[in-house]
Image (cartoon, rainbow, N blue to C red; front, side, top):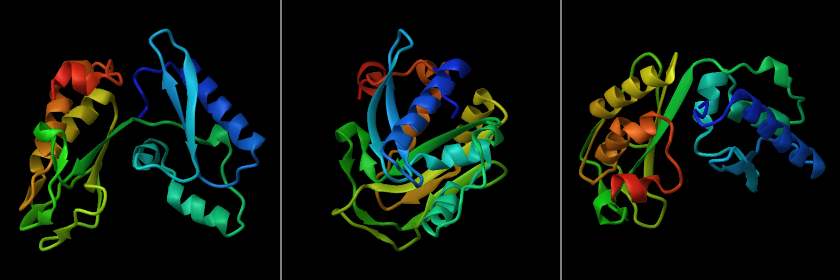
Length: 206
């Protein structure tokens, strides 16, 4: 965030469309509207999730707004303290979902016990996780075990910071997609902001 594929004008139009949709159905809370964007610059409504998404930390990082806190306050009957003009995007943020899975085996889950772990830290680095040494990752649920989020002044700096964060992170006892995420952070198509829905299949050949 912000997406390198979108111009400021397109981002504004997309936001306005999202607001119109939420108002039309009388929605009052935090929510996420998803769009598909094509190579010709057109965007299309895909779905709305009446909750925050896994990716909400990158929005929080570039806007300085605690979305979950605001969601709770709205549920408690308080009014939103922001207007759209108050929201300014500052810098660039990237998030990697760290999963206990094996990318080379069609992303097969890798449940088991975490024998040792080390989480990255530092200025502009955030890790959302409940993982700890000795934790047993079950096979019955989603394989995501952590989210690593970085924030920097621009996209290139954010990419560099994410590479360093992934380098620093250690999870032993189960297979993870850490190396796979690092591969993405080094891929020129992704770095140039030209990845699309066929990226993994066509570029990474997984």
